[in-house]
Length: 520
Image (cartoon, helix red, strand yellow):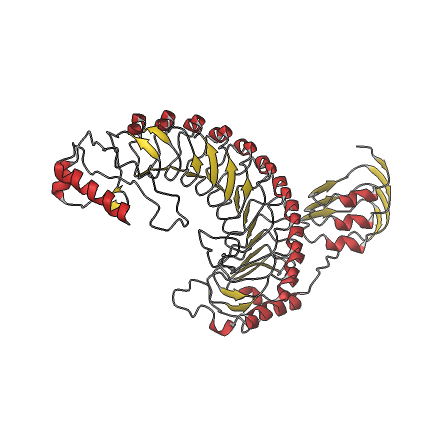
C-alpha cells in the first residue's frame, strides 16, 4: 500500500493481536514504545518504510515473536533484544522451591503413585531434563506436569516466576494451603490443573488475567454430601465467591470448580464465555441465588453443564434451550422452583443425562421432552410435579434410566412406556399412579431388590410381563424423604431376562419385595 504518517500509539491497546504487518508503505517517524504491550504477537513486520530513530527496548517484551523484520528503514539497529521477566536461574530457583515445599525427596513413593518421580531434580545441571519438566526452544520452562506424584506440602509463590509456562499440572497430590496469587503472572498459561487436592482459601481474582487459559480446573479433593442444609456442608476446599474476572477468559474451553465450598451467586460474567467454552462444572458447592439467564449465551457448551448439589433458587431459565449442542444437563439437588421449561425439549443433542431431581419443581412434565430422542437418562424425581405421565416419553427409545418417583403424578401409566426397550431402571414410585406395563425390556430390579438369577425364575418371565398396579403405587401416607439416602425413597426397578407371563411364584416374589420395602 502507500500508507503515510506515523504509527498510532493506540495500536498498543490491541493486546490480542498476533500478526502486525505494515511492510512496503511510506510510514515515517519512530516505532512507538507502546507496541511493546502486544505480547501476543508472533509476527511483526515493519520493513521497507521510512521509519527513523532507535528500536524501543520495550519490544524485548514480545517474547512470543517467531518472525520479525525491521529492515529497509533508517533505524538505529534492527535487532530486538528479548527481555524475559525472570532469568533462567530464577526459573530453576522456582523449581527448587517447589521441590523443597512438597517433600521432593519422597515424590512418587506412595503406593499406586503414577507420577514421573524426581529423576534428575537438584542433581542434573540442566533443569529441562528433570522429570515432569519440559522446556521450549528458548530454554524456558513451558510444561510442569507432576500429577499424582506424591507431592506433600504447599504450592510455593515462586512458581509465578515461570513466565513461559504453558501447562501447570499438579492434580492428585497431597497439597494444602492456598492457590498463590502469583500464578496470575503466568501470562502464557493455557492449562491450569489443580484438581483432587486439599486447597483452601479463596479463588484468586488474579487468575482472571490469564487470558490464554484453555482449561481451568480447581475441583476439590473431598466430595461434599449429596444432601445438606446451609450449615451442614462439608467444607474441604476453596471458599469465597467465583471471581467475576473469569468473564475475561475468552479462550476458556473448560471450567471446573466442583467439590469445593464456594458461596455467593454464579457471576453473570460467566455468560460472556461464548466462544470456546464446552464444559462448565460448578457442582457440589454452596452457591446461592438464581440461575443467570446469561447461561443461555454459552452456545458452545457441549460436554456438560453441571450445577448440581448447590443451594440455587428460582426458576430454570428458558434461555437454556439455546444451548443446543449440550450433551449433559444436571441441575439436581438444589432448591429450584417453577415449571420445567418446554424449551429444554430443544436440546436435541442431549444424549447422556437430563437430571432435575431433588428440587421443588411444579407443573406438568412437558411433552416437548419427546424431542430428546437420543437421551439415555431422565431423572425428574423428588419434586412436586403434577398431572399425568406424557405418552410422548414412550418415544425416547434410547432411555436406559427413567426416574419420576416421589412426585404428585396421577392417572394411568402410559402403555407407550412399553416401547422403551433399552430401559434398565424404571422408578415411578411415591406417586398416585395406576395401570400395568406389558413389555419391560431390560429392567433389572424390582423395588430395589435384585431378581434371583435362578433358571426357574428366568423361564417364568415372559413376553407379556404384567405389573399389578399395587407395584407401581405407594401408600397414601408416604411422604417425601428428608434425605435422599434414607429408606423412605421407594424404587421401582424391574428386570426380566426372558419374556413370558408371571407365574404365581414370580408374582409372589414381587409382592414380597414390595412388602419389604414398605415395612422398611
